[in-house]
Amino acid sequence: MATKILVLGGNRFIGRAIVNVLTYYSYDVTILNRGSEPNLFEGVSQILADRNDEVSMREALKDRAFDIVVDVSGKTKYQCETVIQSLELVNLKKYIYISSSAVYDYAACTLPIKEDAPKGANEWGQYGLDKLAAENYLIEQFENTPIECIILRFPYVYGPYNYLQRERLIFHHLVNDRPIYVPNDGNTRIQFYYVKDAANLVLTCISEPCENITIYNAGNRHSITFNEWIACCEEIVGKKGMVYHVDSNTRNTKFFPFMDQDILLDVSRLQPFFHKEIDFMLGLGEAYKWFRENEDLLLIDEKQLEAERELAVQFSH
Image (cartoon, rainbow, N blue to C red; front, side, top):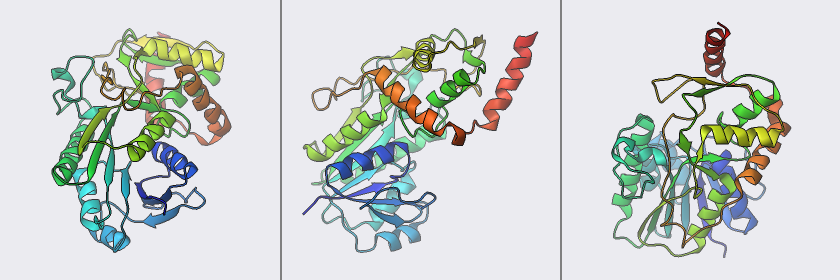
């Protein structure tokens, strides 16, 4: 009998890539989400429920049992509570939680950041604190039980179907000859992870034994500066951009898709377990191919455009 896997989320970006790889390997996959988008997968069951509604979750998961849960959509402790309290845990062997590098207290960390580095408040605000609270809740629930709790902390994930305005923003501006505004000198270093590498890591976590509580930083082994990243996008598009550097005293700018904060996770703990990593330019090329096939549907956020209009006036003087 095929292993029964519940993917929380499943229709967007990381979740979509995970479901694709699991169905390719013939796992019995069910997705749970609010149904704001149609079920995209043939042979995959869909449960409609709102993780912020305990009654909705209890009704949706009543008498349902799964071997493995892959939690892509959980952002808060409460959203994890509604799953654990509603799901029949008798058959559960693994709970895999997709977390974030936003849990770390960057002011107290040295680079590269190890899994046991200080955690807490940072520029990501409530998002990072909520992800950390969710992690702590899951550890508390599964510690010293037969169930493996696996927490994967990702930096910036890129690739096809990325609904966030990251690489697709730069692709859009290069294609349409729009100026690209970069905070300060552009030498801030950030780290990426290709979405299909992330999905294959989840597959490995499912198929290979892990410790009762396993926490991995997961990302490319090397970081890249803002300037280098834009140059990579230019090479993929085949076009030089109009790049302007903006003096900024805030890390969270409205005109650039990344926080002006150095991010480099130490991924050495992960390497013996999983070390596959696509060539960055190949992954970026896949992201660009998807962008060109869908660019008419990918609108740029109005707040982004407003910030750019303000800077255009500044640089016109």
